[in-house]
Length: 193
Image 1: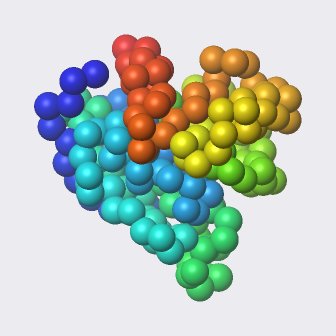
Image 2: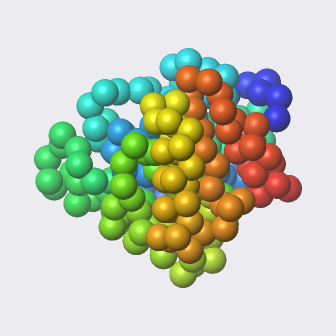
């Protein structure tokens, strides 16, 4: 997809504050510090649209980005380890579940998993949840430039086996090289048609 425009619209924590425009949505979910912002920025050809931090847990709201005036990218708060108070972390799950469960504009959820890390129980729970609610999803394995080709291949096979995924449901991705960018866009375009 050719990116003509991409802009941050708003941050929200409740449904009543979501943007009112009836545009299709693609959501990005994953544990803290997995590379969600880097993935969004690479897909949109923008360096700093989604803020990148080396400190896990910086995204504490649901962030909406309008793409080409006809699509929303939605950056969901990360789960797992984060340098934020426990009471803030407790609010994340209900906030994310409310978005995923009741949003009819949601066309695709991209679950992001770091190629250097073993999947955790929260990743598995989220995938089960996607399946339970019949959500269209894709798994993107980020940071593949930080492991060998052999290790990336092994990680992909482990994900397939552990989560019962098909080959086409996992895309290796690197924000450094751009590997996987075109394949992810093909999945997004197919989902929003």
